Length: 174
Image 1 (cartoon, one colour):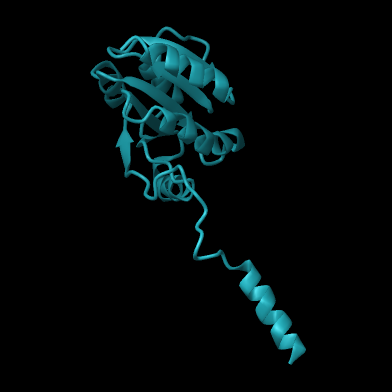
Image 2 (cartoon, one colour):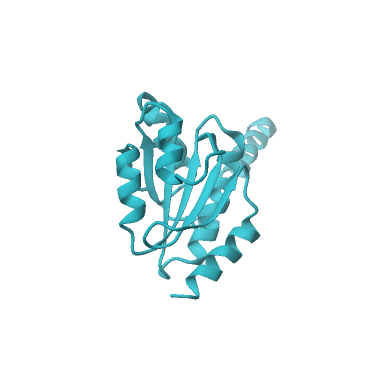
């Protein structure tokens, strides 16, 4: 009988409390995942009237997976103030199910895309034709002003305090 009590106590200790759910600052549902090619990226960025944060990532990129939820927190701070977040996965389009699973698990609510072009160079050129050094590898972060002017770019894991400051700097002009 004591073994049964210990087993039940162990099971119930693993269950999350139902009376006090953990607070969440992220949305409960992920946005849909859409296909996008280089022409679609150029149109998306240059026709925008909002400040856009663009995150290029992949499911196989450890730093990308670590920074997605942190970036979501930064974006949440500016919700309703003219900042739009776009994620672009560079996974193979046939792996879109896995991309969506990751976005859902991390509760990433943004304009989520999977790049359907043949070469990462096409993506790099569509996002930033002036940057001849970036080859399309993730993680890559861009902050783009209305009309397509790039006001911040970073290759590799980002410093979220720096990103926060850049967003704040460009939103105060609006």
